Structures are given as structure tokens and as C-alpha cells.
Image (cartoon, rainbow, N blue to C red):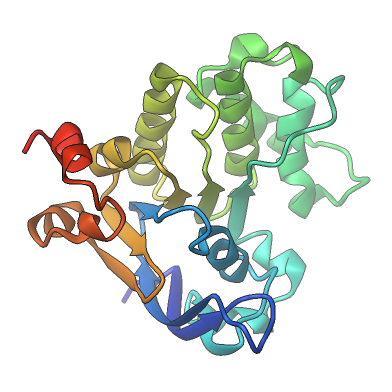
Length: 251
């Protein structure tokens, strides 16, 4: 039986123990699927992601990584299970795309370790898969936002983890780039057998490309298939304006 990549049981999380942000969360991130995490600004999506990757510990309950409590993993072990794509700005403008992607191999080479032929082959494969071979020698400062996002996904991909978590990867992109990134993530989840969780505000693209949806509000986390989310009108938890719902889904 395949183990669930990430699950949460009775999870209460936050930063100050006497003031939790979210309580009693229960969820499962399914294997080889693209799951989109939706919720209003400030509801706690980034806090949840920090708990899922082990950088924050829950106040109560537990996060399990392939059936084992994540607090029992070392940082280096987690780095071979979960790759992250965050929205933090990169300050290494004089780094090339190839050098950026190569950082994803550090869990295997060590920080000062050199790239072996196998590492270079993995990087080359990621460049080809994301169709950015022509950018390999470009500096980060020369990239568009969409190109940089693809490079960051390639960096996560070469980390060779079964789980990829992305925090608002389409936040600063034009619509065409948003579409390309979400389509790419959907393909990666299926073709590379990755469990991918994407935090996003792009509800229309999430409903088109995701397999499952997590909706986070101030009371609970709802997780279900896209079809069931629509059938049960769960989007009303985060889209309370009926005109917006009509615009998004043509009702």
C-alpha cells in the first residue's frame, strides 16, 4: 500500500502558543497529484506550508511525512523528501541559470561538493523538461519573472524529491506565464509522479489544472477533488461575491 506523502492530524499551528492561527486541521496530500491550496490573504497558508516542510513545529497534532512524524526527520532527510519554491526575491543577480539550478543538488553533493557527471545529466534533463536550455548561461538579472519561475522549478526538480511545495509561484506573472506554470506543474505531477502542493490566489487556473483542492479558512481546511469542491459550493468560503463567482465560472 502506497504511503500518503504528507498528512496532518488534529493540527494546531501558529507563532505564539497562546494565539494559534489555525486549529484542528486534518488533511492528506495524495501521491502523483497536483493539489492547490486556496484561501484569503492572512488566513495562514504560508504558516501551514512552514509546518508541512518542518521549519515550524505545530502546537499540537502532527504532520506525517510518508507515515513518520516530521519532527523525527533531520533537516538533511527532509531536503531529500520535500523541495520548496518560495516567493522570496533572489539577490544573486550575477548567478547564471545553470548555477541556480545546480543549487538543488546540494543535498547530494554537500555545500562545497563538486558536480559529478550524474548531477550534470540531471540538471540538463531539467533544463530540457522545462524548455529553458537556451537560458542556461543567462544571468538571473536577465530573466523575466516567468523565466525565473521556471528556473526555480527546475532547481526544485533536480533536488529529486517526491514532494514539491510552491508558495504562490504565479503571484507576479502575466496571465500567459501563469497558465504555462500551472500547466507545467500539472504535467510534472503526472509524468514525474510528484506530489505537488501549490498555494495560489489564481482560483480559475487552480480549478482547471488541479486534481485536488485544499480550501483554508479561519475555521477549518476543506480538501476534496475539484469536481466535489464545485458541486458542494465550497468556493463560497473564499469567494463570497456572487458576481465574482459568475465571472469565474459562468453561472
